[in-house]
Amino acid sequence: MIGVAGSGSRYSARQVTLPETSRRRLDSGTAATAVVVSALAALLASRSGDLAATLMLIAGALTVGCFPIAKPKETPPIAPVLPLLMAALYIAGPFLAIVLAATIALGLSVGAHKAKALRACRSSRRRVGACVTMYALAVGVPALAYELALRAQLFDRVSVAGLVALSCTSFAAFVIASAIATDLDAAASGERRDIVWHRNHRHALLVATLASPLGFAVAVATGHNIVLGASLLALALLATRRGYQLDASRREIAKRGVDLLGRMMQEAHPYTQGHVERVSQWTVKIARRMQIGAASMAIIEDAAVLHDIGKVAVDNQLLNKAGALTDREWRTIKQHPVTGQQIVSTLPSFERASMWINHHHERFDGQGYPSGLAGSAIPIEARIIAVVDSFDAMVGGPDVGDQRPYRRTMTYAAACDELRRCAGTQFDPDVVRTFLAILEDEGHITSLTVDRRAQEVLL
Image (spheres, rainbow, N blue to C red):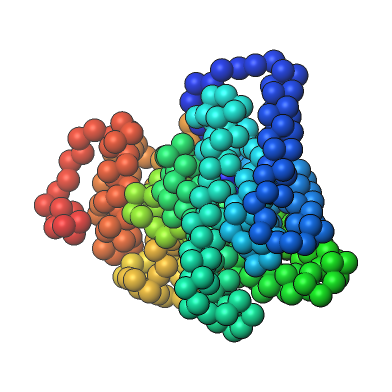
């Protein structure tokens, strides 16, 4: 199971602020009281005659809820609880699974005040209620459906069909929880739902898939020996927890790698600092307006930051040469996209981004480099970076350090005219049209003179 969603953007809902000590006491007191009540309710809800098995599951739920996996920045903690809940469903029925899910949610809600999805809940008790409701719905609906199908004798509990039914129940619980959390977070942050889901929940798909077999194994082992069942439950929870931690570490390593490469590029070529910031911001805006897929949106900002990382292998004097380049010098410069791809491809999950970097100097008419790709054969992400990169190179930045020694800056109007002139040859016309619309919406440009030929190209 996953925690309530959170994103990296800011959320500006009004909140009632309490002193930190009072807020912590309120959170802890609310959660502790509700946990005790939930534990007693779990005992009453269990249909199992084995008190030891029920207590084992309650202890597991309390442990998971009180010691969740911390996530970076403003995203809330998560708890890998699906194996435990599926074991509870198999052993004691849906009501125990629902109560245990609510119990775990209580523990998570203490740390969930960082989540923008819950910031709209102005009091601690409302936040707890939102978290508990989400978990109870996510587990309760598929668990009750599983129980009804079992009572209708659509399958035997101990059978291949029973394992498939339990797997479907586990996956349905994951889908419901992630859908509710995604809707809450998307409403709070204003981001697209597919982007929020991809960022916060995609990595839990494997755990959701493995949860039911693990829960099934725990339940069967508990039926034979409580010590064996408890050991297997602890092993399952530790394994899923470790899987989440490794995935989070991998993404953190990639992020630090991007930051390190960005700093290295700025040290080698100081003019790139403002350039890459502007390119990355405009790239994200264009990609968002063009409805680029969530997988690309997750990394396109970092790809834009690193689009010229290959220039660290090019001599600074050659990059800043004011005169004409020789053929040999031009061949050296044209190697930087390939070098950039080789560098970025070493980062985890950045294989696709490295391809965009490799192709960001391709031309729409096929006359670019390094591969001579044309039209839709060029990744759309690379076509976006190409337009923004060229535009910013033409207009430069506000500081003297942002200006390139080998090129005089142009006005926004002149640069936009150049984009129009080259649309359909050097640049993708759709990307150009989208970028110009963004510039006009933001007030960077107002009315521009467009000649007849440029209009025909764009239309």
